[in-house]
Length: 222
Image 1: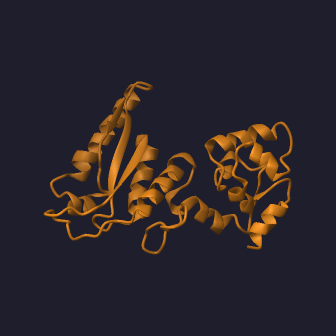
Image 2: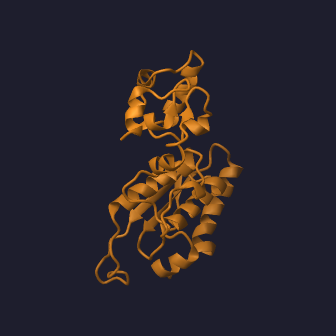
Image 3: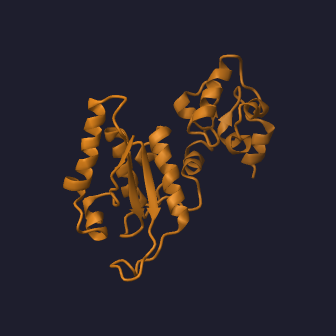
């Protein structure tokens, strides 16, 4: 069973501009708390919780949306956050506001999954000076370029948390790596290919038995 309470905006100030007839804390947020309390009272039987944000209607940056999303995941057990890119409608108060680029909606989904499933904190996400994510770069890849390009991680000893920071390694393939390591040392990119890992994405950010493979060196030299 699933229950959805659409916050629409990340905080009371933005909601006042978007839907002034709604109350952020006393109406919408309170309903999410009630559902959370019900879930705690009925473990395993309570409804899952989702919400939705309208993106780009009233000038809210991505960082505000993702800060609220992170709180909902962490403290209220939210199952999923949905994002709906703003498109103006004629004869409405916001009809003259521009539509968002669809890339922005996609980046928010990617960042939301990093918060929910991959152990990222909001502060780690690669926000630009305007508080938005880069439109044309996967946020996980942007983080890796900042933090792993000059310090690749050793796949044979990295924790699951660190494995999940590597582009191309997801929840399932991280577990496959952990199982494969119990059978022996991972030495070649072909070992990763057998585990279903896209090696072209992962190669620049990893070491295999202390070494970068020849294919990795090609990535480093451009």
